Length: 170
Length: 282
Ligand SMILES: Cc1cc2nc3c(=O)[nH]c(=O)nc-3n(C[C@H](O)[C@H](O)[C@H](O)COP(=O)(O)OP(=O)(O)OC[C@H]3O[C@@H](n4cnc5c(N)ncnc54)[C@H](O)[C@@H]3O)c2cc1C
Ligand code: FES
Ligand code: FES
Image (cartoon, rainbow over all chains, first blue to last red; front, side):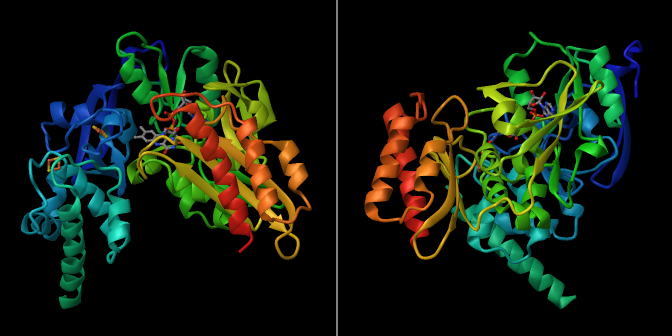
């Protein structure tokens, strides 16, 4: 525990792994994770849509669970494993998911897509054969103003199929 | 800049709260960080994250109580076998909260402390007669949820105290139960009106015991003990159901706001009970 008399409580050193690499950074204790990622670390894949938990554009995975970077403090990452959209292509199933979004035409302006893909990643790790309803539920915290969602659901359904297929081949 | 004090144990939380009486605990942050953002700059009270305090996490059962740590997320509650067995009504309500990421972050203790008339864990907790365990450096006390929540956003918590656990009776959930929430959208929407009901039947279509609770139709969750008493032993015919729904419409005191008018809420509150009672007839 830090003592209040030390100014150290306003600056914190935070250790975590980010997309597989260990990081140790000094940051303002009350820095939001979305600002830490975008402004301090230059990872602008995660978007800030609303800043209040409503849109899901800032969705990241913390210890494998989908969380909202706009409602987390940097200190809450200490000791965790963080995944953002920048690391997706290096994960076993990430490329298939991203390819499915492209091939199904699920991307229009693209603003919601990093959050959609992270939410979909969490869903597919949990359930590799989700129904369309389960996909809609898994993405229910993510808003898209462009696509009307149908093609996004198509893309996740296709990704699930491709991922299962790829496993069977191996 | 705001200070963030990071306790690793419950004793450290109490100690920090004694030394920094203005500090605010933060659990999932899904209410607090939204609120602080809207007041940016005007408030730099320190925060005390509770996430690393192991004593406040998890669900356990000893002979006579099921205990839920205050910092347990709704995702954990939904997935927990003890909850599925002893408090399935709470899991039903938890499934309707936010989207998956919100449920991974939002905690039951935060939901109770926020004391919103629309808090979705509250109606089940009123029916299951949850006891709220509160603690500070001075010791522990227990309050029934209906006494813990005083009004919208207001609770019986005093300075230096936090919610530590939510205590339920194993087997306290009746066999027939439902949670319903009416809103503009299915997910992420604040309930216009919510309803939790549970009942035990004695034979065909006769209520032995039933409990009902409504959210967003009064300053706090509403139960109508007189109606519950009256229905015990009643046969569920059309007349009884119509009468019960009418009593509900007369008992609720909703407000009109941007989400719905008071009249709409009043009529929905009656309809939700009628639908539950009709479902019990099979
Ligand atoms: C997009 C979105 C959707 C939402 N949807 C729903 C919904 O469908 N249904 C619903 O009911 N709510 C919903 N909420 C509200 C919120 O997620 C819940 O109320 C949640 O349970 C709050 O818990 P938390 O852990 O995030 O609380 P926090 O934000 O961490 O804290 C809330 C308050 O409680 C205090 N506190 C937290 N833990 C304790 C403790 N152990 N002891 C004492 N004080 C404590 C904090 O100091 C703060 O004042 C939603 C919020 C958002 C942003
Ligand atoms: S920016 Fe985080 S949910 Fe919208
Ligand atoms: S593609 Fe534009 S918001 Fe989803």
